Amino acid sequence: IPYGTVNLVWGVPVGETNITCTAGGGTFLIEFGTLSRLTGDPKYERAALKALQSLWSKRSSINLIGNHINIQTGEWTANDCTIGSGVDSYFEYLVKGAILFQQPELINMMNEYIKAIDTHMSDGTGWFVFANYQQGRKTMPLFASLDAFYPGLLTLLGKLDRARETLYAYHTMWRKYGSMPEFYNLAQHDCMQGREGYPLRPEHIESIMYLSKATDDDTLLFMAADIFDAIESCCKTSCGYTSLKNVKDHRLDNRMESFFLAETVKYLYLIFDENNFLHSNGEYATDHRTSFGSCFLDTGYIYNTEAHPIDIGSLDCCTRSLIDEKSSDKMDKNLLTKKQMRWLGNSLLNQDKDELSGAIKTNYSLLTCSALTFEQRFSLYGEILT
Image 1 (cartoon, rainbow, N blue to C red):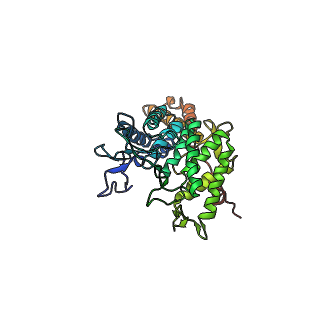
Image 2: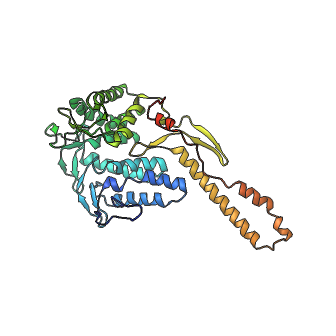
Image 3: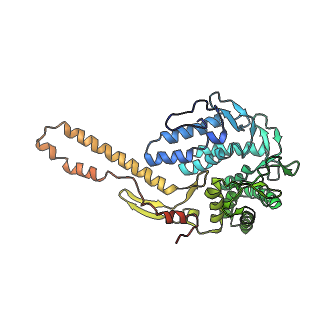
């Protein structure tokens, strides 16, 4: 399990804590797996998988996990299991990693977690609360705004009815406040003191996007419109959009997090742009001809935890081209080694001339695409520059 902070030149900083959150240790597979597929070096994907599997091995006998762990001792230092805060993207990457890299064992892990979550953390009405990871005892009747990613995860797993139940429950809170507080006490029906703010988080909108594409439920479009109208009327300033200090009185903060543009706005845009290419489900594809055959791009996208889309087809293309390239390189080297063992000038030297030329010609390069202009890249976010 990796440290929370690593300097890419000097390594782990002096004094760095051994404690990391579960999400921090388990949110590498999409990026590191992609890097391995693009470079042909499996070490990145292996390291990320090792972290996921290490966290899995630390689960309790009832298949729950804590939210912070000592990476040196393997002991949990925060014993509350949640579906959101401190854990969320670990669960997310089990599912998305399984889909992107064809790793069914990761789906099996997540399904075991879901069974335990349903048994020990569900209140039976679509909400999930904190529970002790060893005993399964409910510890705090809290909803955290990061929990709102969970209906989207259930949607990816095909559990649509359960995703809808939880999403609808969460949206009642949005309707109550016109935004979503960081923490809400379900027993007291009130925001947790000191955590009443709304920092423009994307998780609820993300789940609406996934479920709306999976079900064509028009009610979800009205939910998205609720969110858009609230942000536009309550959070817009002359210099951008700001977080709310308190969802009860809508007092403004003076801060706009980077995830607002990277995720919140993007998911909102995609909900209403129903034919956007990023919604591709594989029914259609772009046939990109290469020297090693056809590559089918735009067959579908997996978003990393910061909503950056990764083209599944392009990873397959690049992986195949690397395999062909390495195979061709090996053939070239074997052929050249054989020739080095012959006398220079010997008539036998020319016997494999055609074979060598053919091998060199099949030394494929990586699939590359011409870079988009700044205007084209920016237009992906819905901006038209003139």
